Length: 367
Image (cartoon, rainbow, N blue to C red; front, side, top):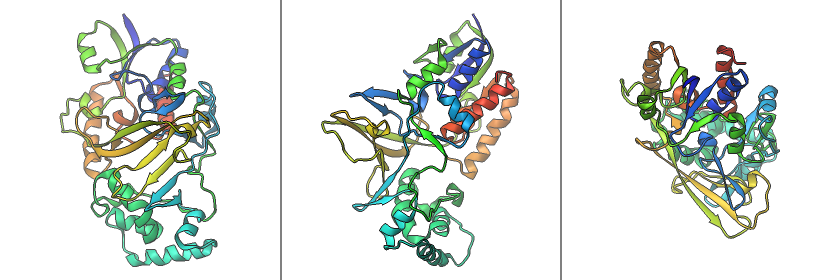
């Protein structure tokens, strides 16, 4: 059988592309190496609670057209992400706002908070930051950095902040108001029936082959395809010709607790280095439900190795240069389109994934 498109990976990027291709009358076959659709936004019902199996995903965007688009496939609730941070038994408000500054210094006046931060920044004497630690201090001062940035960042990247390049933290937003909404975007929420349901609605009746490795499949199939949309790792596609791109990964520990509530909030970050996990997610708070039990997940960052999930591209100078070498090989494969976080070696928020997929749809004449 001939298909117009072979879609590799059943995550959000290919779900958007597939939805547009179907409406344009194109045929698609989708292969996915995991045993489920929806990629890293996969949600699974546990004790009647939609559990984010690969970490918390809150959709947010400033684009009304994208907001209208995702709401075609499920109703989004009004969840607002109000993250807290635990440091040595004290709970702080994130992102850094007047609640945070009041907790740190007892100030209630924005000008007082600004003066303290400016005084703490002055320790750098105006020098250009040479590492992440100096970059963070130049943005938020020493107190915020030491309590709420340093330990979390070192756990996330597995390296001392002094050994990380400054560009990893391009900005750390400071709010001199009591607004503790984690995102600035006016539209945010979570699908009422979970992301898996949303993605299934996008895919419709498209044929999906789960537990199917693309490289094994393409060697053995008799099907033909006009084009391939590849959302796997670009270095793997080219046989690691120039070496392997680096990633960070995550390990999850999920528990069902026989109690109605555990922490009273969807996400609490743990910013001490000595606490091995970076955050605890309590999933029921994403959808305002009142089940008698609760489900919590601890996230542990880890070094990536073959066979693990590649979550975060390490976009330092070395890996960026390596990716650019692989990118140059794409011209040798005119019938293959590389997309998504792994295909483009880029960390994407969900709205940016959709926007990237929509640009491809337009280029393909599907939008």
